[in-house]
Length: 135
Image 1 (cartoon, rainbow, N blue to C red):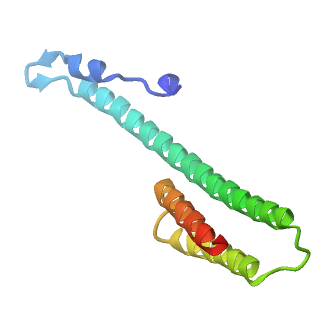
Image 2: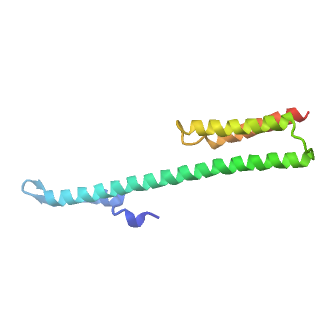
Image 3: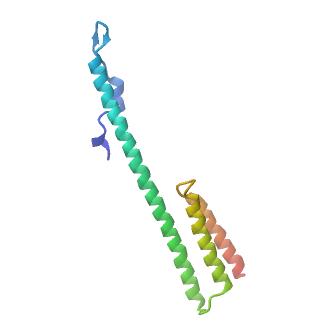
């Protein structure tokens, strides 16, 4: 994927041998090799930055889609109940979802996004609450 952007492999660096002059290694040869290593390191850093940006965008998309899924599930529940009137339980569920959105956005300042495992745990807790309310 990124092979054409990186010039050196670890084996190239390990097996590199410099010619020796009377005072030691040839400076031009060492300097040019170090310059090539520096270019590769800069390219690695650029690749890492690109990957981190893409990761952040994907995590944000996941959060948006999960919220959309929650909203659709809530709409389906309301439609299934056949009630034209909104109950206090519906209002509480919607309020709970809004709080999750707000807290998720607040947490983005300290973390990129909440961990997926935590969201799954929250969804399980929400299901448990819903089951208790239905009883």
